[in-house]
Amino acid sequence: MSLFGLGNRNQKTFRPKKSAPSGSKGAQLQKHIDATLGSGNLREAVKLPPGEDFNEWLAVNAVDFFNQVNILYGTLTEFCTASNCPTMTAGPKYEYRWADGVTIKKPIEVSAPKYVEYLMDWIESQLDDETIFPQKLGAPFPANFKEVVKTIFKRLFRVYAHIYHSHFQKIVSLKEEAHLNTCFKHFVLFTWEFRLIDKAELAPLQDLVDSIIQ
Image (cartoon, rainbow, N blue to C red; front, side):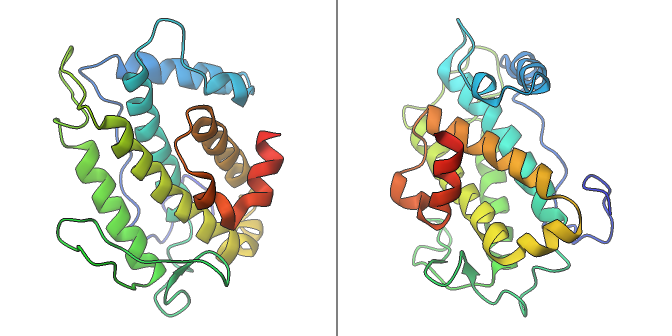
């Protein structure tokens, strides 16, 4: 089963790729990401390009990592089911409950696929909100933009943590572990570069994170 082939996927969870913010320098920065990733040097690829706007860089990367996690999780939707994964966990010590502060204010226990569905819906709503991710050239980013992005990355990390703890053997059997590891390394280096995830949140994969950032 190809990583990018749709296969027998749950279309609700696996979403179409989102494009970089178009009215900004998004497309241009996306090309920069693609070019630097092609060089294989992930530590260089995550750095803010000289002369570029910090928020623009956060925005285009938020879209990029959303797409990466979407594709990775999309390969697992037939295995990550409510019966196999009745709660959203990352090993025996960590369980995540869902709340978005708007429609669900008190954290609720949900299955892993339901959590990811809620999460992807929530991230999409943030990315599609032009008051948060402006599309028009020159439109300002909100004052709390970095905090919104930090919440997006914190929650995307939880999907990686669940995949590594609950589905890594399946990833290996699908021969996708190299791709998973590269995506996660890129994710960790980016979030570490800009201090986007608090250290305590990284605990479920701390050893793996430490091996990447050393």
